[in-house]
Structure formats: structure tokens, C-alpha cells
Length: 415
Image (cartoon, rainbow, N blue to C red; front, side, top):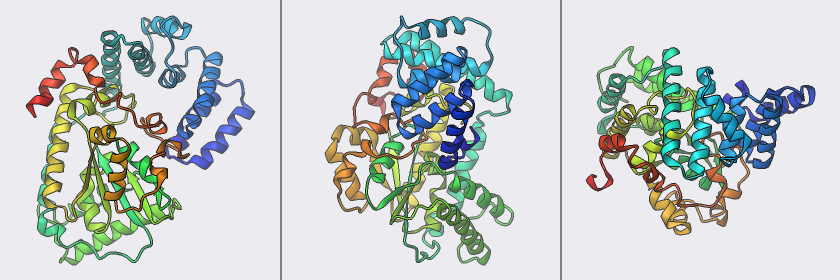
């Protein structure tokens, strides 16, 4: 599980094989195998592994959730009946989270939306409680202070003097936006191109950003970045070197390399200072759709803002404020792509997007779902099938239940 979190695929494959061979009667061996095959897009093998894990350990809720995520059972299936029975018993919080999201997925698949919402809400309450017990809470004021710091540090003047471009053979493509806004789909399209290496969700830039902010606050926390100051330049150069060392260690050696971490939208000023020639792709999605998708995604204890409508709406407002600032100060500007437009336009939308990125056209970009590469995100199922429009209005099935969220975000007609 640690190797999975580190995205160390070669070692994960080896360990998973060893586990199944040495401990075939251990449910966790098959659980890990299921996770590995899910990442690799081997749906049938993943389902088989999760089913084997459940045969060996009928109460393994991790296997239940992932099996329902891949292949929701019918409402008469013994698995669904067992999960409903478990939900009415005293179980630990982690198991309750898995059971609630598994039942919600199954009920949504059956079109029983009101009941599905009850389980989505219960699952989010359980996640919120689990994170609170670990001291993880969403701090609205801290988020607001981060936005204020961005606007103070990254002024038009500061961004007009980036570091000089290094003589490298690669050009970075940073893909940002809110999670569930289409970032995985966009990366899959680009990674299908022969000149692009898909770097996936790398934590490198977030680590660099935290270290950069910590060190800069030691000498100039309240002033705009000034690249005429030798201390600023030295700090920026050290940050860039740290980031590139991480990229080179991953053997991503094509002409273009993607870095798809949605939360890097907070780091776009630093990115532009470090890599003035980098492509920045901002993925946008209709606010209600993206917030509802976040609320219904089972991320575990990942981020604390998406487990309540109030925090979701606040975080979305922060995101909008940050992106408004970047639009005003970044040069060259971002490539902005709307998820709804991309999905509705189909092949023509993909062609326009690839052209906007300055890439020569390759038909493989239309067949992005055929690309064999590990996908660690919650969109690992969606990126392995052709573009479909089913997710565009998914939230409307729950319109009555999510009235409070709609009121906080504003109805589509109000924006």
C-alpha cells in the first residue's frame, strides 16, 4: 500500500506477484492485486482479485467498494444485501465510509437517486469524522490567507522577469484545475501523442512550493517577488533544480512531459517564474457538476474540503479567485479548456485542443482510451473509454437533495 501511494509501479508489480504466490490464502494479497490491475486498466483481472479477496474475507470493505466501483451489483445480488446488513451494524469508521460509498454507487447505478444520496451524505459525514479525529480539518481562513499571499507576491512586475530558460530537451505541460474537472482526460489525450510523456499526478511541485514559501517567508513575506534580488534568484534556481531532479529521476524523456496535479493551480506563479516556456493547461468545469462529483468521489482521507457543501463552496470560491488573478498576470497566458465543451465537441474538440498545445496532429489522440499506462486517479475508469456525455448532467438526478449546494454556488442561470 505504501508503494501504491508512492506510485512505484515496478516495485508494486513485483511485490504484488510475490504476495499472491506466497500468501494465496491471504485476502490482502488479492486486494493489492486488485488495486494494481485497476491502475493498469485490467478491469476483468481487478474484478476477479476483489472477488477472491471477499471470498477469503467476507467483511473486507475495501474490496467491496472497489468491486462496486468497477461492477455495481444488482439490488438482488447477495453482495448488495450483505452490504446493507453491514451498514446497519456497529462498524469502525473506515469500514462505514467504504460501505456507504459502495451502496451509493450501487443505488445510483440502479437509478434510485434519493436513497443513493443518503449514503453519499453518510459516507461524507464518516470521512469528515475520521479526518477530524486525525486533526485534519478544512481551515477557511488559511485558504483565504493563501490567496492573499498569491496576489501580493505574484504581481505583473514580478512575473515579467522569470528565470532564464534552461537549455533542456524537454518542455513541461502543467495540467491544473479542480479535481474531477477533466484533468485526467486531458492528460490521457496528450499522453497518447508520440512526443508526450504522461507524468501523472506528481507531488513534486507541491513540495517545491511549500519549501519555496517557507524559505521566502524568512526574508520577504510581505513584498512582491523581485528577481533583481540575488536572494530571490538563488532561491528560485534552487527550487527549479529540486523539481528537475525529481522529473529526471522518473525517466520521462520525451519532448513534452505532463505534470497533472489539479491543486497546482495554487502554484502557477511559481511555475511561470521557473519555466517561462511551460504550457499551462487549465481545465474548467461547471461549478455544480464539479462540486457534486467531488462530493461523491471516495478519496478517503485525502483533502478536507469536499465533505461538506459549505466547505466545497468556499474552496470553489477561492479557486475562482486564484484563477482570476492568474488570468490577469500570467504571460504567456494559460490554455483554458472547458470540460463540457470538450465532451460535447467530441473529435473536433480534441483536435482543437491538441492544436492549441502546439502539437502536430496524430490520430492516436482520438483513441486516447486505448493508451496503456498506469492511472492512479479516481478517473481511471473514465479515461479508458471513448468520450461520453453521461457525466455532464449527473448532478441533476439529485437536484432536490443538493439544493443547499446549488444555493451556495449559484444556479447556472444566475452565473
